[in-house]
Length: 81
Length: 542
Image 1: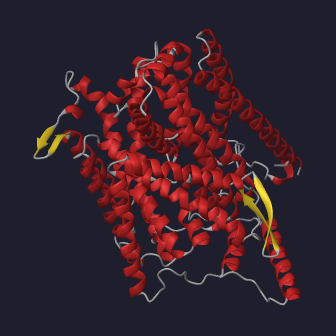
Image 2 (image 1 turned 45 degrees about the vertical axis):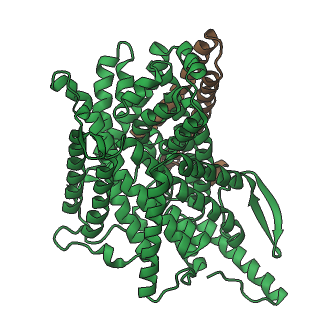
Image 3 (image 1 turned 60 degrees about the horizontal axis):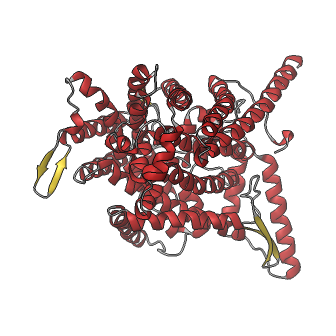
């Protein structure tokens, strides 16, 4: 979805901060799962879970990063006006 | 926890039955996209489902969650398309009514009402289960949930647990009649704590306690039979309910058509990954038999076994689980009132249900009726070997029936209403010509319909109680529908005429989706021009 299609965020809440932290934490967690899984002979469910945590953690982090940038831009624009 | 949970502990200040939120209450967009999902990602359902699914699917529980989860993703994508196209709070029954007409809209509503009443019962039972986590500590090793009695053919009735459940349901009914509402702050604090706890259990569980060799051992040597696996994977769908909240969010958020798709997809995948994460970490820490033995408090029991943190995490999880499940049980009470109101607006049920008590200003009739049904269902469930299992059966039936109808509606609406702008479409479409126009046939939508249909089939095949009680409930509902429509001189199998185009414009205008309104009007104008050229006149759908 292109930037101009999404409305600019108006607020940054504690819920948003938790969601962003949540996404960030998923990446090292996935790495830990993968690491321990490979030591134990790489059982498929564990490898898939580890990979899923890393992949989705990266997606959420990039999404959050984009939204934070727009929020800061919206704040700067509001201050100028 | 369903974010539509209406609040307790503050005086209710409305003089009318629960209605759609007025346009002026639409919420601003936050950085993450929707304030409502601060805690809904991994909600109350896992507190109940984890023990049930591992108990049934044994060493293959992650696979059961994965298969149910894949179907859930497709259901979620369907809800995302429908919620962003039709941003009203009606949810599954509204989409079904739009797509398949009044009769099937009613059937979908009845399936949803079943789930709301089971919601009341199931989460009250589960909340009591987590409260019982503390009873061995208080009563010197005695767990109140183990107190049982045999009456005639009914063996091992856990009467203390039953009484606790009845008490909780009674409190909920009383609070809702009085109009006592919780503050949204309480909701948000609990939700935030829930996210932190669930993340902690998964993260520290994997880091400090997880033994992949135990997971592998159970996968290889404790793999269930096909029947058990089908039973477990059909139960796993109860971890993934709460999709109705997407349509609720669509009504209550500004610019829902543009914000809901992105955030709901993030929500759906997060729930999926965490359900898998819980089952994987659980089977790497404890044998599956322990989860079956602790089906009343699986998350607290799992948290207790995390080194260093367990002594605090276990009790904390029990308190949080009991609280969140109690609030989720309340969702069933308010959800059934809201749904009954919506169905009466669409002339599917009597408006008698919407009477507001002049003293308390609450819809006392729906609260008493559906709260009473929930209490009755809880009572009956304790006459079976496992109350949670029985209620989970029923929940799975209602959910899968409702979702099947939503998928069929999604496909039909692509044909019947190709003009409504769809800011999000379920991917994987075949572009075809249909009656002189262009239609995107949803191939993945069909796969989703087959997937949820398969789970519904598994429910009917393997759930002894669900396959009888579920259809019986729907049949009873249909008998009422026939009676009500006949009495009101309304058609039974045909639909009442609606001006859907006018309604769609109103809905999109209220949602501040002005670009979509213009897009819609242009599409309709092009269609009308085309029809005039072809000499077929206006094609307006009613």
